[in-house]
Structure formats: structure tokens, C-alpha cells
Length: 239
Image (cartoon, rainbow, N blue to C red; front, side, top):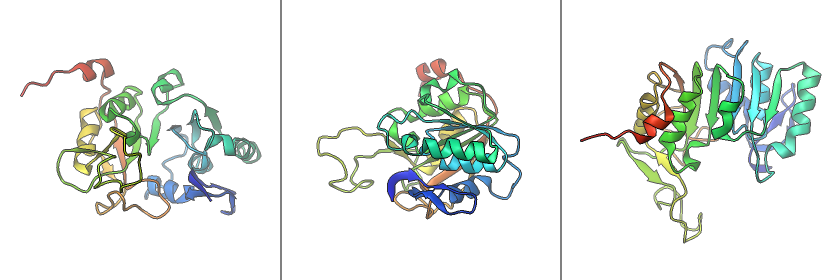
């Protein structure tokens, strides 16, 4: 098994590349009961990992762009040939771009954006969510590791209540943030999204997660109005 990666599956469900996460579990989680949701959609999968999930969504009728710079050559670099061959053999609309998150505005516009398992890797998570809003998707699918509290709070990943001792070097000061579910919902609303729809049960908070899935909390949200990232980042909020 290749840890930290999605499996890539053949049409019959057998594994062509064995990873830690099951792309069909993820695809079913995002799809829910609307089995026709992906048909005709233009999807941008930001941080698409090995492309296993993107491949499954393309099989469900979407035109998908995988945005994955893979600086450490431990994800799409291992599976690109498989993904490209599968797309050709199955007649799928599937492309691979090396744009990182904050260069995705340079790509063509997509009506559906996926940002799964990225938010907590950044030091300024609200900036990430605001940027996703500025891409002006109709729908956003986002996942994060969330902290089990009802407060509107962020918890640093180095906090011993989140990651056990020895998981990170002792001199690590800031490694990104785990929001509570309550805060993640509020962050999406601040960025102009409608009331987000939770796709995973509320009992799933880090380290709990759905078997086969990457993160503890998955949400689907429709964009009401895009925000101006620069203005939002400089906003002064008086008490």
C-alpha cells in the first residue's frame, strides 16, 4: 500500500494502484443520492493526489481537470500513465494540470470545485476558502480534519490533543489548523457560500473518519456570491 494516496481502480473495481484511500468510497460520499449530479459537470479537483477520485468522477460523466503539482513526486507522478491510459481507453474527459491551489484562477473556469484534504495544511485557512469562492464555482466540495468541539475555534496541528507526541518534530511551531465543524461551516458562509451540507456524520471528528476516506468532515456548498480575496483579507472587524 502507498500511504497518503488514493487507489486507482479499473472499471471492474480491481486495484491498478493500491493506495490508502478508496476513490469509490469518496465518489459515493460526494455524490450522495443524486446519481446524475456529475453528468456534464466541469470539475476542478484541486490537489487531486493520484487522480483516483477524478477518474471515478469522469466515469460518472464529468469533465475533470486534476490540479496536482506533486512537488515531492509521491502522488500523480506515480499514476499519471495509468490515468492518461484509462482516460483514452474509456473515452473520458480528463486532464492533468500542475497548477497549485493559488494558481487555479489561471485555469479555465469550472462549475464544480473539489478541495479535499488541503485546508489544514495552510497557515491561513480562511484565505484558502475565500480564494475558492473567488474561483466562482457553482458548487464546492471541501473536506478537512476537524477538532471535536462546538466552539468557533482553530486548533494548531501541533497541539497534543490533535496529534500525538512524536508525530511531529519537537521544534515544530505551526503546521496548519484544524477547525471545529462549527467554524468550518461559518468560514464557508463568510466566503459567500450557502449553508453547507454535511456529507459525513457529526460524530466524525479527527482522528475518527469514514473508512476509506481521507478526512473526518466533508461538506458540499453552493456559492451565493464570490468574495474579493484581497478586500476580505484586509477587512478590519471592529468589536
